[in-house]
Each structure stands twice: as C-alpha cells, then as structure tokens.
Image: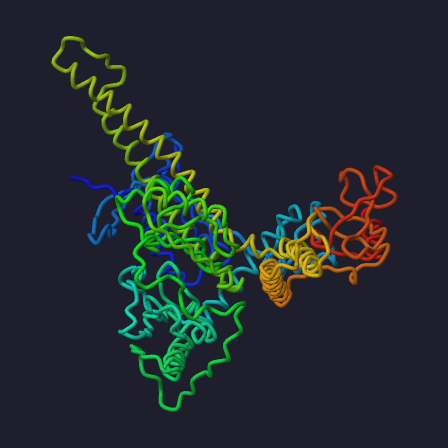
Length: 629
C-alpha cells in the first residue's frame, strides 16, 4: 500500500532541512491554500541563491507539471518524516515548491552605489533604459535601470556577502532531531531555592524565583528577561550560543544570587581556570518600589480581585462550578491556563478600571461570594520590559498561527485528495442506475465527494486566514520599530508629556483639568508622567540605534532653501525650511521633479522630515535636468 505525506509535514521537513543547511538564514515556508493547497512557497532575504535552495527543495516534490500533456507527472520521490515521534515513509503530496529570494535594503543600497558609479553618478531611481556595462568584472546586460540594479544585487553583491558569511561562521554539527520546545514551568517551590541551567536547546534559564525574594533586580541587572509564557528568567539569544558569553552570564547570575544570600543550584558546565566573571551592575531604579507585603488576609478563602500595572486585573480564588464563571465572562474576563486564574484583557500597564472592578465585586457578592479587592497601581514594569514581552508574544502568535495554517492547509489537501480518490472509481458521466444494486453505493460516494469538497474549501479558507494573521504577527516588531513611525510616536509622546506637566502645575490640558489638591490625583498624574518619560527614553534609544545602523534621519539642518527633497517617490523643491517640515510646491504629484516651473497649482504643501528619503542640491538637480534635456 502506497503511503502519502501531507503537505504540512513536507513543509515541516523542508524547514528543518533549510535550517540545517543554511544556519542563520531565516526562511518563510508557507503552504498554499485553496486550489494551491498542494504547493509550498519559500521566501528568504539575501543568503544563498535560488539554485542552492532548489537543491534542497527538489527531493521534496511529489509531482511536476508536464506542459506538453497539460497534466501533473509523479516524480517518484520518497520522503521520510517524523510525525508525533513516529517515522513515516511515503510520497509527498506536493505538486510544486516555489522559491523567491528578496534583498535587504543594505544589499540594494550597495547595488545602487555600484550602478551609479558605472553610469557616472546617475540615480537608478530615475529609471530609463540603459546599455550594457561591466560592474566588478561582471557584464550587466542592457535593460531598465531598476532591473540592472536587481541584477547587480543578485549576481554580485549578495553572493559576495553570502561567501563572506560562510567564511566567518563555523557550522555547528547538524542535530539528529528538532529542538524540543520549552514547557511552561511548574509553580516555584520557595524551599527548593533557585536553579540556574545552561543547555544548548533551551539556553540560560533561571527557575524557582518567587515574588519578593530579591532575585528579580539582580537578574534584570545582568540582562536576563522574564518569560511569562515559560514562567522563568532567560538570556535572550542564548540558545545554541557558540561564543561562551551565555555561560559566563549564567555563572555570574549564580554567584550574584549566592552573594545576596539566596539558595542556588547551578547545573552549569565548568569554566576554564582563571576565567573572570562579568561584574553585576547596580540594578536600575524601578519606576516604583514593589510592596513588601500583600494586603490580603492570610485566612481569606474568597475571591481576590487584584490589580497591578505590571500584572493587570486578575480574579483569583475561583473554583469550577461555583457560579463565578458566568459573572466574570459577562464582564469581559477570560480564563488563563498559564496564570491559573481569570484576567481582564488589555488591563496590563494601565490604571485600574475601578468601575469594572467594583461592579464585578458587587455581582459576585450578590451571588454569595466573599470578595477582597486589592489595587496597587504603584507596582509597574518598565516600558522596555513591556515592549520586550509584547515582541515575544507576537513571535509566539506568528509561530502558532503558522502552525494552524499548515494544519488547515494539510487537511484541505487531504480532503480534496480523498474526493478525487472516490471520484476516480466512478466513470466519467456515469448516471445513477436506479434500482440497480450499485445505486446505494453510488449515492453514498457522491455524498462523500460533496462532503470532502466542502471540507476542503472550508479548511482552505481557514488556512488563508491563519496565514494572514501569522504574517501580521511576524512583522510586528519591524513595523513597531520603523524609524518614521517611531519619530511620529515620539512627537505625540512629547506632547503628552507637556500636557501632563501642565496638569501637575494646576493648568488645563487635553481639554480638561485636575484638582491637584487631592493627593490621589497628584499620585496618578506623577505615575503617568514617569511612565511617559520612560517610554520616550525607550523610543529615543531605538532612534539612536537606527542611526548607529546607518539609517539616515533627516532634520532641518540638512536642508536650505532651493534644495530638493525626495519623498513619496518624487523630488520636491524646498521653498522654506521649517522646524518640523519642509514647505514644497503643492498640487498633484504627476511629475518626477516638482519645482516652481513644473508645479501644477499655486498653493504650497508640507512634507514632514520623517517622510523624507533623500536630498539633492539645487546645482546637482539643475545638472541632472540639463543632462536629460
């Protein structure tokens, strides 16, 4: 009996092979949906060429398209995959694998520079047909300028960078099996102390910490982050660390915890004799101090409604069947298996919603429950910690939705294959022979074909929706840290900070005013001011890092009247340089260069500096326009 391997399992095997063959290169392996559910799409940026990736994908094709006969022809490829711990050998249900390599902005920028040098400083963005030229010993055929730039990126720049990357990286031995995922840690036992481990598959992890034991500031100062999902501290990027820096951090954490009088069990490889451990820096002052004691009575056995800015609004102490679930659901609470309690979505890093909390308390008490409310808005986490947590959860969402899309696409492909298999037993055009012994079987087969086709289309739609959500989650961090977006966000935050300072001074802002004679109002405004200042500091660091990475951020100091600024794909003459924007000729953008002579309308427009992508002096622009004429 011939076995077949679903597309989702082929995709998983393809991911494994690509990671093993090209370490450090991030591949996107997406299973098709609908009529393309038997196809796989592979995308990546820079790295190896399509031919090298094609050598990996070729053995995973189950069929190929015969254009002469207009049909799919089996490749007779046999594949062995591991599914739920068992090895399965069969033919892959894959009609084709499409590959596409993109190029990063750095590669395209270098390619543009080489192109411009070959054409006497011309700008490839201006387009136009160009003749053949020799670039770095390679013949670039005549074509449109953007096509020549991409040719240079593909044939010259990207291969050179990939060769350098291969020369500088020592390949680690391929693993026989995929890395196991870390499981959520069990509740910490304070009496067992803290355990520090360093393993290739999990990296550096610290488990067993408890709230208020003093370990958090020490670990945070050493660069460790808290994983809410896995309930442990970890060193980001320490999985499969080849430099030894992760192991040094693990030993430093163990020593610092012991120095603080905390019991530590360190399951760590030994360091060479004489190795100096990095000194633990002084912990950064937190926004607020954590409370020393909880105000919930020790003998309290009811439901606790607890709110902190660090943890959000939680409902603890409920039990299955006690009637609280319906009340909590009616007020938008959800159950969390990780937390083991109910929580109010989107309540973290915000002030307590006292109206919702008081209304919930009243409803629970009317249902016969004893309720204790504890609100500590002074317990908060830094904005950097909150942002890192959001990025981690976005990565988890992307992985989860991609897995769901793969499963749905596999189910769709299997349903269509089953419908085709059943239909292959019915001759084309064969009617139902009423009264014949085959009538019942024929009707059942038609019903099963209809059911499988409906299931195939339904699962195909699910796969498409999950793939879109996975792509949105995967691009969260890139969009979040986009320099232009960050600059606009900083403007809004700085305006908010100024408004809060006015409110603290007793003035009106945001269309309202606060009574600063009340201590609680001053405390809340102070917290908001501190949090806003912390967020501004975080985004300014992102901008500084972007500038350090070579991204040009334009300001008024870069322009004078008469210069040309590039924005939205066009060049605009600068009529006036303002503090936050440039005044340029207005009207529809129907020409590549818009100045006083080519403007369509009399009014002016403004371009903010975060929209600017280039600058050219008036002399250079005049020379360019003269050369075109």
